[in-house]
Image (cartoon, rainbow, N blue to C red; front, top):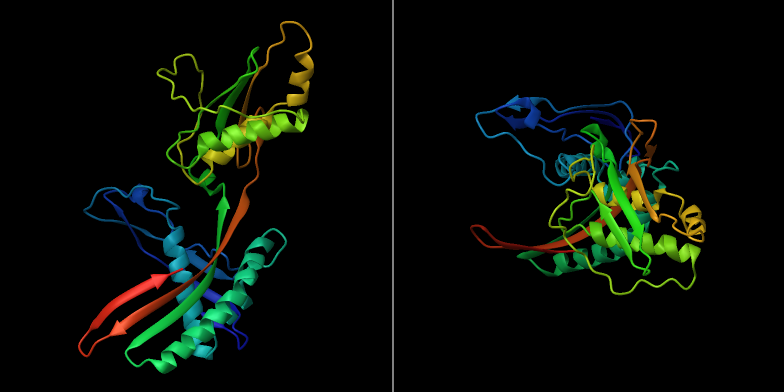
Length: 302
């Protein structure tokens, strides 16, 4: 790793070996730069076969490890230059238009961090055995990264019945991420744009006993934080204004089907939903109590 006197990292070589299990297909890259823009970075994650079960997907595979490693690099530069890690973060953070959100959110939290930092310094000066620490970091995850594996492509069928009820069927699997709720809110938003007096009442989610009546093919597993977003995009996909106009004619069908995925379209009949950055910033304050022979306890709070 190379860095100049301002803390800007000018060169980085980061190789992280990944234990894949009995086959290399179980390994994932663990070297993302996250919220930082470092030119000439050479990143590699060689997959190592081990006498263990095959590695399986977790939430954002490789992202947690990569974020931890990057912050260790940031802190190493800060110690070398004798400055606060936030100064190094500021020098290396993404700042282009597409990634502007990460710097804005980080900047909004920086004032709180500075206040907490002063409080921590005062606490440490007044206490010999109990010490505190504080750290903040920017985070960024690109929604749609799962396209590197297969790509999210979800289908939604929206039906408006003659009694005024609206039914939505989708390929998204609800596992607690709010997929069904997001689809319902999206449909309500579209209808409210067309009819100011539209109201969404008596909402209920019904798990079908059989999916034999549904013809859903080519869908993807739930991963990459893209399933619920793709379902919401599919709900909005068709021309609702055209459907409403058709409703004035007797016997008009008010059922439409659409498909969407947050990546480049793989088929001409499917429109792409471009990936977008999801930005975060976090600040953590921790306390440790030191005894004569060992460290007794560490407690942390956001």
